Each structure stands twice: as C-alpha cells, then as structure tokens.
Image (cartoon, rainbow, N blue to C red; front, side, top):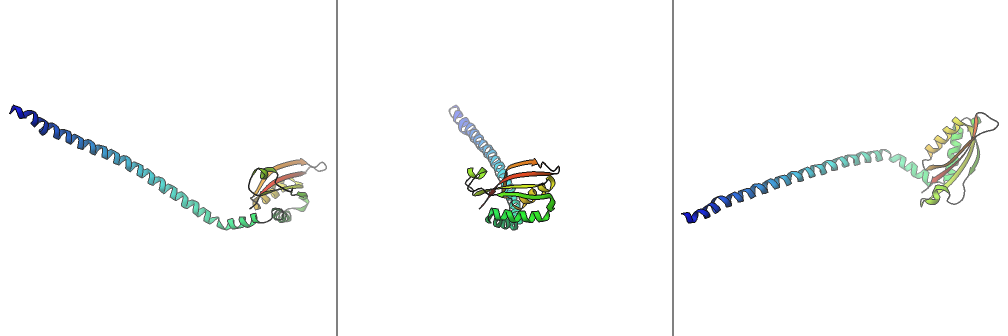
Length: 178
C-alpha cells in the first residue's frame, strides 16, 4: 500500500483541492469582473439618461424659441442700413424729441473693423447722436434689443459745450449678416 499512497494523495487530495481552488478563484475573478462591468454599465446608463434629459430640455427650449428664430432670420436677411434706419425712426418716435437728435449716419464701404478678420458677411455702421445721457442709453438699449446681430465696436462720448445735460455719442457697430 505504500506504493500507492503518493498517487492517492496526489490524485485523491491535492489535485481535487487545486481544481476546487482554481474554480473558486475563477468564480471570484468572474464575480469581481462582473461587478466592475455592472458599475461601468450603470455609470454609462446614468450618463446617458442625464444627457438625454438635458437634450430633451434643450430641445423644448429651442421649440419654445422657434417663433423668434424666424423673426431673427428675416431681420438678418434684410439690408442692414435700411433695417437700422427704420428701427431708429421707431425708437426716435417713442422717445422725447428734444432729448435725442441724430447728427450722422454712415455706412463705410467694404469690410472694416471686426468684420474684416472674419469670413462671416458683415458691414460697419457709424452713428452720431446728440441728447441726454439717459435717453441715449434707452435708444441704444432698444436698438441692440431689436437688432441682436449688432456688435459694438467703438464708442466715443463727449459733453456738448453749450449744454450741461446733453452729450455727443459717436458709435460704431459691426452688423453680422446672412
């Protein structure tokens, strides 16, 4: 029986124990890998649902602003100087005539200012106004609200020598066009 003792220990005890240990180790590795995969998939799903919710919110915001988009497109498609003149006339009509006066309106030919370094079509418009500071502020606020494509390029302000309440504004805009 001594001859078979080594074989019995090896094939009866050691080999089954090694096989069981390999199976338990493989199962533990597979379980850990499964947990890591599950965590990764849960994180990916959470990120997906968050981005989907944000996309739906952005889409609803865009749909809510859809009527304005058409108005902006038509505004951008119009000639900038005529559009600005009509907007300025409406603004002047709403403000006190004694407190605001347009002294110059100029549209230099070609691309100058910010528009010269961009491929986007643009034009420059220079306006000179005289009036009270508050009234001119309201006029510029209303103009820039009506024409969101305007980019303030230069602003020069100085007091009128004969009046304490009036100032001269010389303002230059770059108007982006379609």
